[in-house]
Length: 235
Length: 235
DNA sequence: TTGATAAATTATACCGGTATAATTATAATG
DNA sequence: CATTATAATTATACCGGTATAATTTATCAA
Image (cartoon, rainbow over all chains, first blue to last red; front, side, top):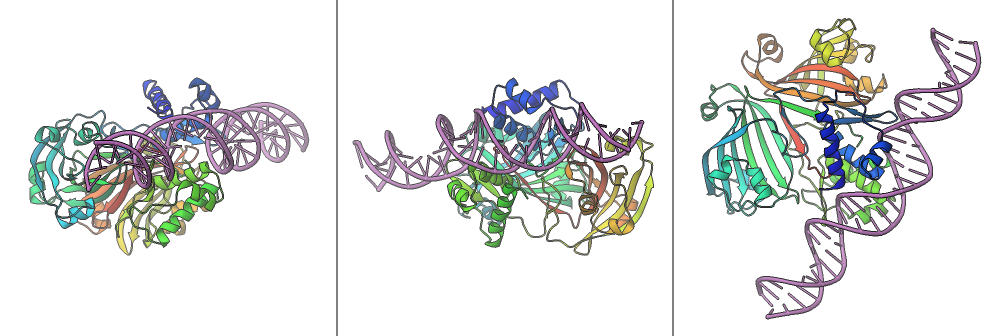
């Protein structure tokens, strides 16, 4: 692991372990430099990472301070990856459909592939702490996600892509809507037609810019509480 | 303006002006250095800023590439500030209530003030392209936002805080829910009781970490389409 | 005590360098 | 021609330095 990531991790653990309250001032740069036996630039980079993650804020001329923590029960809607989004929650899934098919024009467009190329289609229900979280339909570029099965799709497909396939997940574009449930969705989510849903279309990219997954997710409004932090321009 | 921000702006304008498509490779670092007559570090900083803004992605050993643009009609849900979120849209507001009052326990807690301290309370409807976008209730710490009136609240309160009061807005914490409209909300949004809403509680902070605004916003689901981009860890 | 002024503290901007890791292009090999 | 090994390209990590701007603390004057 990179040095600045390691330092960021240690500072994060320090904050979480000691449960430092909002506004707590961290040691000054000079101290952190000697504490972690590294250069100023590397400390600054570690702190920038933590600032991006919403853990701290920096005030020029003053210091580095701990930021407010998430409320209990809110899913952290992170803007820098997908790994720790759901930490602290019990996540599982039930696969409804899984097959290889030709993509629709819309799916092909979003995945930047030819309509004749194959995609894996997965439809599943995801659970959070035993409750229905969402109904998900995903299309994976089969050239990238070369294999999928029921067992894999029951767990974390992204973990599988990262670990087993060795692909590096990069970034994503999300299109968010608030809508009413249709019949099929209501059935699967255990809700009523016309109930609210958060409907999100997402294109996931590898770190080299190739789109590998296009997904449509309908969230159960009863289980959907998200925590989102913005950061300033000054990084 | 800072040099790296200036460079970031110019690159951004270059992308937008020439409408560079997704995947276009930008000049290599060396070229950008000489083009903008600056050091490597400053170019890297400018590119990092653009990466955070979701405009480009960088691939080690390969290059810097243009990222996909927003779909038309989607409000950009930026994670680095509030200035250009609504650019390209026609925004206005109608003030329903505006007064000075004592905060509730919850409001006082979120603003980190005493229940005996004064706050400005503003209730207003915000319009986007002439349509009702949302119903907003906001509480401003009167020690920071020392004055407000109807005219100011009809425009952008944040612009007023930044420009007239000279305060620097820093970051925010958002708590997002999907719910059903109650009677009051339905009335103001021109919708029906039970219709979906996106309900967002936000605490806004100055760049020195002081919370100055606690707001509750109910979004009209018919006008609510958001675009949100995540970035990787590697900045 | 209050208010203004100066000094110290602190994070940030900017520079330019070496070393490294990932990718891409080229050359060699069968 | 396809595959493999090698070299070139390219972004990133990391270093340590000076200058600067914002904040906080200390000092001084009224």
